[in-house]
Amino acid sequence: MIILAAAALAAAATASPAVKGAAVPQWQDCGDGLQCAKLSVPVDWARPHGARTEIDLARMPAQDPRRSRGSLVVNTGAASTVQGVRARPESVSELTRWFDVVLIEPRGAAVRCAVAQPDPLRLVLAPGRAGWRAYARDNAAYDKSCRAAAGAAYDGLTSWQVAHDLDALRAELGEPRLRYFGSSYGAVYGQAYTELFPHRVGRMYLEGGPDHTEPDLAERLTALARAAERRLSAFRDWCRGHLGCPLDDDAVEVYDALTRRTPLHAGPGRSVNARRLAAAVAAGLAPRHWPELARAMSEARQGDASRLAALAAVTAQAPPATASGSLLCHDFLPEVPGHRRLRTMETHLREVAPRVGWLSGRREVARCLGMPRRGAPSWPPHVPEPRHDPTVLVGVGRLDAEARPAGPVPGAVVLSHGDGRDAYLLQGISRLRATCLRTSVHDYLVNGALPEEGAECPGALTAGMYS
Image (spheres, rainbow, N blue to C red):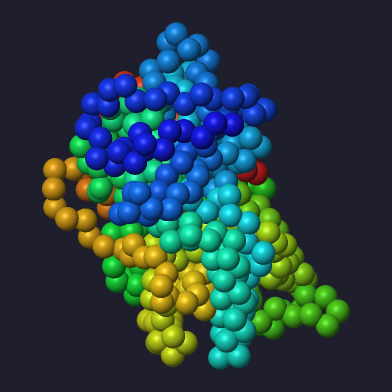
């Protein structure tokens, strides 16, 4: 691997839109058809001559270098974009028909924290103060281990810094504008870039990222709760339309009936109370889990809730972990509500999302509970300042668990679709190459053709289940 020139990168944050003479990375083969390099950047772009850190890059070359339209930078939002693409190259490989696909890791991906982050389900299932304190202690230990492992680089764990990394990479690639694909948390980095470098935005597709434009935590939690209830309704509609679904009745009515019967028998000495039932169903609402959830609910109705109990089983992650959890907290929850305040919020969440959605607030807060905020970097949610905004394409999935996928990005053209988060990537993995969504994204990234206002693509991932 090769470390890119530091001097050119320090100037990248203020480089002119038309970059001339930018150094081209000297990529080296690193297996699985990828070429790798490292990007040397300041820990803090506000102090470009201070301490430095490195960002891992990988490139999937265009199928025909002579016909390549340039570089498309990709971040999938996974803990490691590079390793995720190594494991499932088909998620993005079709893009190499037109581009050199450059994968960029987020800050913290290479950090190996000695303590794993606890499962947020612990806090969901233990609502009392004792469970709150125990979870906060363990989450603080995770963050402390990340701070120790990252060293000075810990202070750069925000999307504000990542946006500057993207612009440095754009300069190194010799591109006058950033062409970008961001899914899940990668869409947050794209949002930051459009705000900080609006005149250097090229064609950009963002999908399924949390909303970084809503500063009010209560509003964000309410939106998350309502999104979970919508997914429960979507699960019911899907089950009604598929003959193989074992729930021959209304799935929501089945859930209500199971709630009235709690505690449910789940094997020798085990039971499922109402809270664990809600947590189990919420965990099964990701579309890929729908067949499993339908079977679990059917068996519970017949007297065996062991599959439901398994859906709500707390998992203990083995270290090492990455610092991605710390980065999320610096971006979204620089101030975590206390136990009493969250209980008050949950009263409201139960009113707007009474079945499973109200648990979303506790799961979201659990990500950052116990992490000390004093001295931690922060780039909290905010409404971007009005300015001339570039046009970007934003994918909004009807089944997305996030509040408002990719947020109300100024200047965005929205393409609605019937699947959930990471739909483009998952359709590629499922070999669904000619879907409405993927065709629309390709037409925009390659030709600049935006979909018509109000355009909507049908769900492709759920159509084949039980068919």
